[in-house]
Length: 132
Image 1 (cartoon, one colour):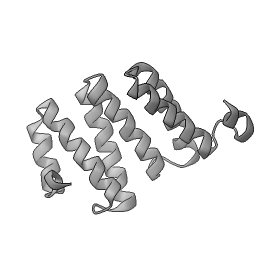
Image 2 (cartoon, rainbow, N blue to C red):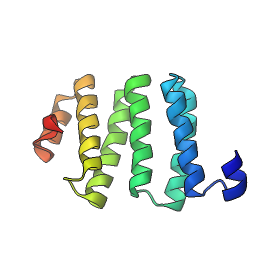
Image 3 (spheres, helix red, strand yellow):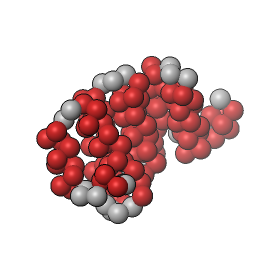
Image 4 (tube, one colour):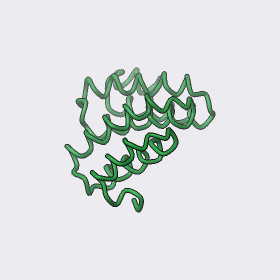
């Protein structure tokens, strides 16, 4: 609340704090509250930084993690991981650590959901994803 008053609701530091609050609620297993904060951060980051900025993509990935691990909504998680991965590849390249981290998390989601076709497509695009 303090940063929001001083810096404004759409300042990057405010949005980072909002994102971090989402992580706190995720750790507390309050997934609905985590999504509330992550989605608020995402809306602001998309507005201020753009949809493919790495910080925006990190928030997209955080939301995917909530859907995968907390809410067990693998279809929604897969959509979000796909979005994040495409953004990371375009902005940072396939060999960047953040891209690889996203691909690794996406791989785990595809395994959990039993999406073998999606997993094979990911492995084709990222042949070493098992070792990331």
